[in-house]
Image 1 (cartoon, helix red, strand yellow):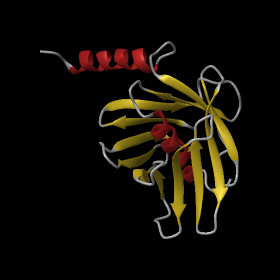
Image 2: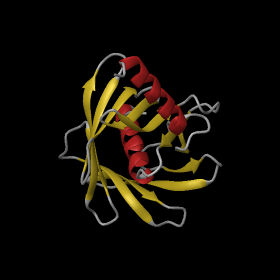
Image 3: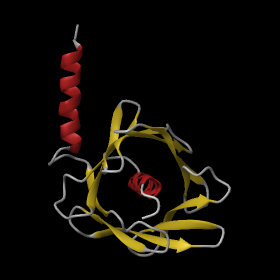
Image 4: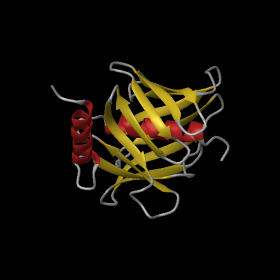
Length: 186
């Protein structure tokens, strides 16, 4: 019979294999304070190549960000609507169907908790220090993405690591939506 300590040790080893320095997770570089409606910015991969463009649009009824590939093809959009609850943002696919709804779930002094309602999959939990860009995204107990500033020495830059076989566009859009809601008014 295995004890909890052995189980936890194996979980940490598995976590390092995916999210460690030489792990199998895909790593992206984001710049904080550049995410705002009306602005455009690029998300770069770990080789410094432009992977996704986020195009900010200010429209009369709603604020919208479009995720595009390097060739300008729309992959998804993030939007807030006037009629929506203040602490939620919707992510839609290129066909207009809902991919996810990002909502604040619980706020405590040191850790925030968010829920991502996925249109055709399991809900995701987001936990950690959102304001300092040190948090993880998971399906239940399984971490599928990690956000951290520790990988970059550049000021106002943070990284997003995404486990293999996950939807990179969706998880990056979730990260942008959380960043915008957590840092409103900047």
